[in-house]
Image 1 (cartoon, rainbow, N blue to C red):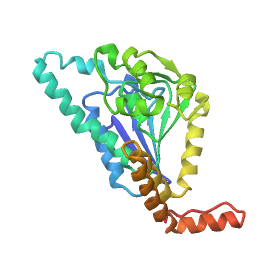
Image 2: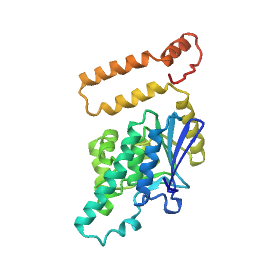
Image 3: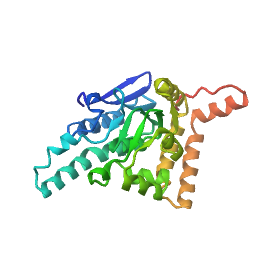
Image 4: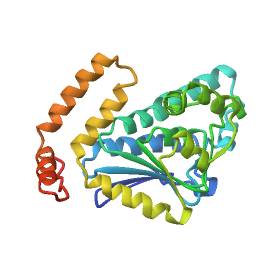
Length: 266
C-alpha cells in the first residue's frame, strides 16, 4: 500500500489511517487499491486484537475526490460505466467485506468531515466514536450518484428504511448530536478528548474475550438474513464454542471470586 493509506500495529492495536489530509482524506482513484491492500494486510495479520480506522489531520473522509473523478468525464458513457464499476467491485467492495469479516472489533474514530464513502466506511465499522465537531452527509445524490461502500445496506439496518431513504435521497448534512440520536454514532465526545477516548475503548476491547468478540460479530452479521430458527441454532453453536474456551473458564472463575477477569484470547 502507498502513503495514501497507512497501517500501523502497536501494542495489539491496529490503526488504519486515511492519509490525504490536504484533500480532507477524499477518496481518489489511486487511493482505492491502497485501501483494499491495507484491508487485505489486516486480514493476513494475527498480531492485533482491535482495529481503529481514522483520518489524518482534522477530518475523517470527505467522500470521493471529485477533481479526480472529473478526469473520467471525457470517457464515453459505456467506458465510464465499466471503469467505475470495476473500481468499486475490485477495491471498495473487498475493503468493506474484509472489515466486516474480521473477528476483531473495528472502531471508527471520526472528526470533521465524514461524507459519501467516508460515511459508508464508518457505518461498516462495529463501533463509531465521534468528535462533537463531526459533520455527516451521504452526499451521493448531490452529484447524481446512488451510493457505494454498503451505504444502502448499513443505513436502513441502523436508522430504519424511512430515515435511510431521507438521508440518501436528500443528502442533507447532520451533526454529531443527530448522529448519536440516530444510532449512527455510539459515542460523541469533545474533539480534544477523541484520541484518549478511542484509545481507552481500544484497550478495553483488547483486554476482552477475543474469541467471544469474533462470535458476536458473526452472529450480528448473519442475523440480517437468518430466520429466527436459524439464528437460534447459530447462537447455540457459537455459545458452545465460547463455553469451550479458557476465557469462559476465566470469566466464570473471576466472577465467582469477585475479581476482574484476565482474558487471554483462548
